[in-house]
Length: 119
Image (cartoon, rainbow, N blue to C red; front, side, top):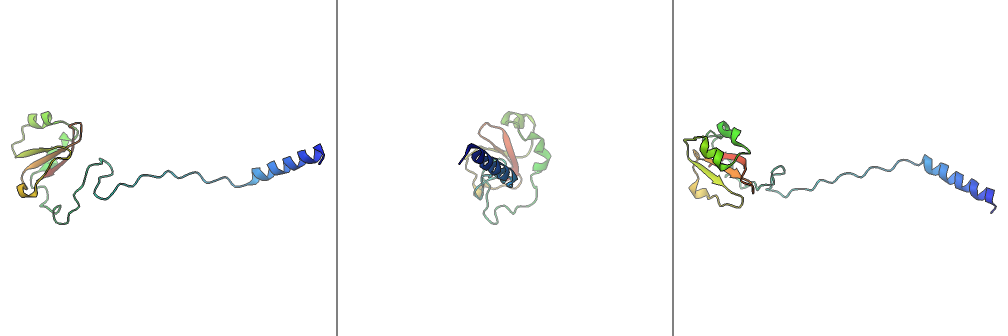
């Protein structure tokens, strides 16, 4: 092949490559959380049927949502008159001790409240 023929073949290949469709962008793969793990907090969620079907807000946990992200010190300073319990990550919460009028404050590893529920 002559130099002109090689350059022409190269130009034709470049033009054809420019006409090719653009490749699809790679899709970001979100890791799937296993069942029983809250995807936002990463904390375990009890999926046992029946144990999560409690009377609605018998301990008035909704009144204390302002304590989310706070520590045990702020909970004690809030002057809550109802029974309360602090639950640390990996802490045991026995269903035998269930009290629908008690407020449970669930904390993360840093001691900040991430969930408030009756029990």
